[in-house]
Image (cartoon, rainbow, N blue to C red; front, side, top):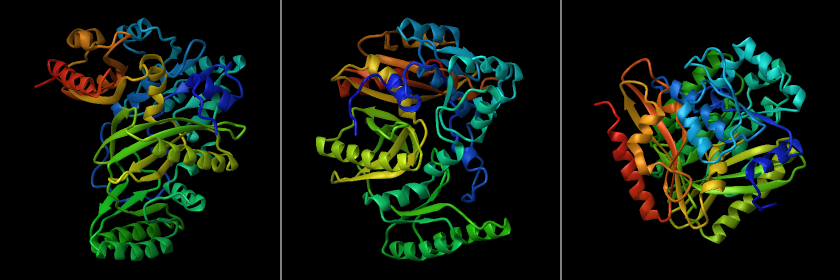
Length: 454
């Protein structure tokens, strides 16, 4: 287990390519889980998921992973003033490639595949040794790699999907003896029936359980249950739908609800040679199961961090045996008494925190505090970055000290054209104390309020 900390991107390149020299073509296909789950049985949906345009515009995060000599495919070219802002901070940005048409309902991979000219443009990069590094790999990214001739810097889609399954996470933790909440992994209807019976005893004692789809993401595909009748009703709905579709397999996890003091996200990287390197741990900010940001450094003691590092080493070695290499993100939980559940689920893809690493290395000094978060915005017309800069003034990070470093501006205007529209401003808040961080957050919210629709 290697816990050293040279620059993340060269380290990542070496892990997945064997060398830090070849160029990467970055692709921010967020919520790739939607494609992994396309042929899977899901929980009953009360309503359709919203915010598709904003989610797809999160691809701009990938701009901050590449450096000089690298490339990134984006749905839209960055706002020129925003691009200049990043360059003025001293960041070596990758070359940007965009499709002729950006459909808000498609992710960046789908947009690229729909543009033959862009496919030909990307194909020219293959001769220079470029590799494609996506947020996560589905069959769509495999198709783009095949059409462009740019090999993936990742395992096949089927393996990435398998490792991302919450069923896989749960069974792997059981196999390795890693502490986790009581629960059951189910990939057949009979196993689901047995799990519901066992979970019914937990509910009868006054506790709650959580039913999770294997590929749920961003608070979707999860149901908190506090009664036996409700749990059995869910089972019957799943059973009926599966049998009607002729399904012989399902993928769900049922777990006991546990109290928590904090959510954690930690990341490690598995090399092609099986070497595992612990990258970082951050305290996740969530609301209603939906990710809102990260706070770091995480409020953990040395013993707690050591447990996470040891867990990462166990997981990394086992993932390497299964043929996986690349970035791995793990969700964990701190109990009120300080105890840890070091594995709630494994994500064999980039994580939101992955896109903060380059900025963290460059701009967050030892002893400083940082918080990555997003601010909801509601606008009546598209907002130019220059106008945001004017509104924030000295609150906007300028390369040193404290301030808000904007790390995705595309999500602000993703819904433009259907005014008024909702968007998100993503940024990294940097401060010298926790109190200053909280004050900065409040002042930024106030500054943004001057721009918002009534």
